[in-house]
Amino acid sequence: MCASAAEFISVLSFWGPLKADPKSYGEVVLQRLFETKPDSQKLFTKFADLPKEQLQNNPDLQAHGGIVLCKLTEFLQGGGRDKKTLKDLAESHAKQHKIPRVYFQIISDVIFEVVVEKIEGFGTDAQTALKNVLKTFQTQMGEFYDELGFDD
Ligand code: CUP
Image (cartoon, rainbow, N blue to C red; front, side, top):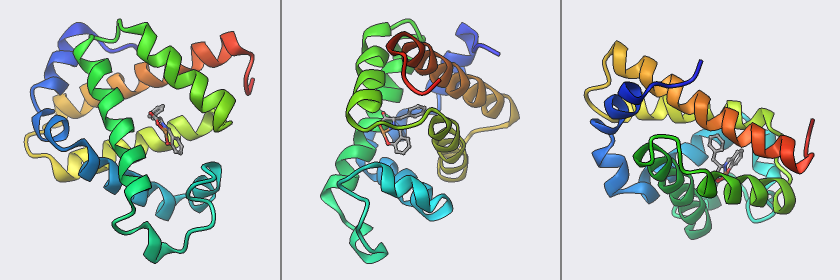
């Protein structure tokens, strides 16, 4: 299902801490992703061969985690209508990193889990809204993957 305008607003109303500190939350998201789905660590050459200890306080990991959350914030603030951001993101993830689209579902689940755990205020309605917003994000990324003819 696609997220409604009200759902974007609902999620944004709790998004303040994530917008203020994208690197720290993004770092937690990627660490959790690599822990729960170790093969996802292999997808980025920068992280592929790092032992667990080197994923702590890792500037590259913090930087990429920060990008993930900043892009999501931009997407939220644009109400899901800002296609340029997503198109660039889809291009880099398809052409440069070659990330199969199934990983977007996996990272979305991790983002959901981390956000609900760390951010206060996400009641059931806001949780549903967050799920739908992430689904919309993922679907639009998938549409650009289709256009690029990547991973179908
Ligand atoms: O931004 C970025 O960077 C991305 C994010 C997303 C997408 C879709 C959905 C959700 C989110 N990414 Cu990067 C992704 C990924 C990574 O990093 C890793 C692994 C997997 C995926």
